[in-house]
Length: 383
Image (tube, rainbow, N blue to C red; front, side, top):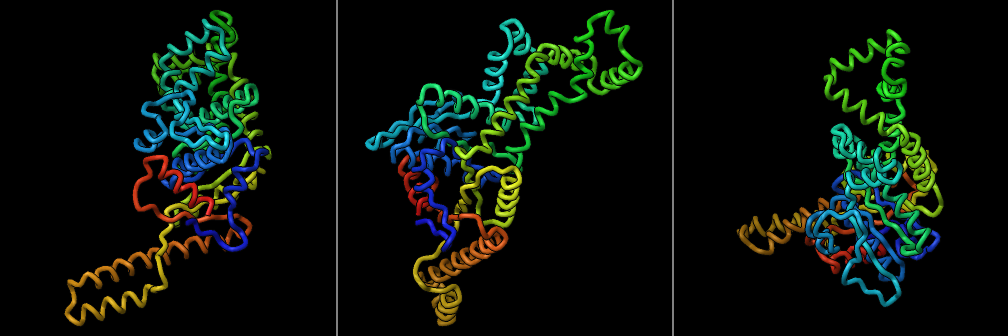
């Protein structure tokens, strides 16, 4: 079962049962179990009566298969095997970053402009690999899902698994960075030729602009610069929309209908990243539900590490070096050492974040690759 700290426990079941909460965002550093946590929360919410859609980012293959996501799919699909006796349901989807960007273009540009943008080499590069695009598109898709939920009432809870970024803060920072890039001076310079047009541009261009274009031609190359200029000119009518939608989604994340669950492991770096994120959420006035610390080592029984070590040494000193009992005591010693280290790290986090609700989830004995495994994680999360 999950272990929670007295007086400040994260009540997962109360969170999932609160129908005023429409969005739960699972965030944290990469590799701490965000995807599994998001899927387990979605399954537990669905089997308690909520209509849930889980937006996940690049799950492990076996977890994806357990959700019926055998191929990348940008459309929510029903998850088979969910107990719907309480009236709930569960759908899941994996974010297709480029397809989401394409959808934005198709929705906000004329068919002719959309075709021109989608075929542009620079657009293909930006939509596939530009830094921050995945985080931006995750927020675009969240906005789309929320708008759809408000229209057809298909879902009453959206759970978001944020991208596996190097830094957890990338999820909050990337939309602003991409919006600033698209609205920035560099883009405006590139747009100037298309806006002025032909000879009018040549007459209007200043010496400074000419020098700037010359430098960019040398740095980027003439062909790439032409691709960029063509992309910018075609995308001109959409620039305001990128920033506007980013601002709308940011406001949605600040709304009381949203709850953030920060996910961490009991390692120093992951908990430090969680602390940074908790602080940032406070600065941005975004509602924090609490922190989940995954993969925490616990030991059964009351045998302390010191007593287990002493007993193992005594058996080995008596000539029982190959004794199975001595081996088990050594294993218990190692696990107890890990458990003490984990609790020390969590204790330091709690000391610096005394008002943050927290729950600890034990390290699983095996990979989570099916719905039964997710149910067990959900039960641990709820404590």
